[in-house]
Image: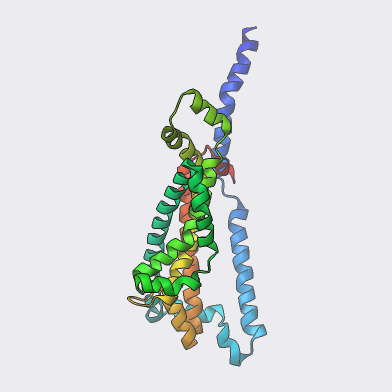
Amino acid sequence: MSADITAPAEVAVTAPQLTKTARQARRRRIRPSTVLTPLGSLGVALGLWYAASYLLLSPARRFLVPPPQQVLTVSFLDWAHLQPMLQALWLTAQVALVGLLIASALGVTAAVLMSRARWLERSLYPYAVVLQTVPILAIVPLIGLWFGFGFTSRVVVCVLIALFPMIANTLFGIQSVDRAHHDLFTLQRAGRWARLRKLELPAALPSVFTGLRTSSGLSVIGAIVGDMFFKQGEPGIGTLLDVYRSRLQSEDLFAAIILASFFGVAVFAAFTLVARLAVGSWHASADRP
């Protein structure tokens, strides 16, 4: 009889452990598709690139889409061509990261304030939407007149482009906390700021990091756009893109585009990793294979 009584208890104790172990093993296991799928898409992209160079364009017009090996030898393997691109990319990276930091701080702060007072949300959120919908190129001349045509204006462009996803996702996360959890804090007579600090902000972390990943890519785009229009000081990668376009340096143009794209992917991947480490295993997104 005692064996019959203790058996369910053993199952109840070991089941969560088995589930946790299975999750950890699934996250550690690398599936072949994880590697083969990106390699396959890369092969398709290179095939399309070669087809555009050799099948769609005549030899006289092949400079418009130079083949991959030509971009590799002329731009990536020639230090005289690669060095200015890397220097410009480093400046663009500084602009993007500074703009992302400012946009994240402003976005989270604005979302927290709007979550505390409904009248603030009704007053400020429409302007955040307008800021997102106004074409950035339309206000670039004003930004240059107000902040100059150097580093500061480039950062301002990044902030304007990357701000709205941080506000929208953070506010959504704070407002999406389960009602039962709020009831528990109400029973404990928790204050509004204690509720925010201990319940709403931790529960909103997945949404905050979703906004951060989105804003990171937009910040890179904003830095490149700022480089193209604000050319005082050292050139960024966007400045080089404009120069290569005007000079018809197709190999360098393609190489600069590839470098800028890789940088954007690297920033997105870095914040994805940070999100997984910060959120941990308690959120459903951590169970994705």
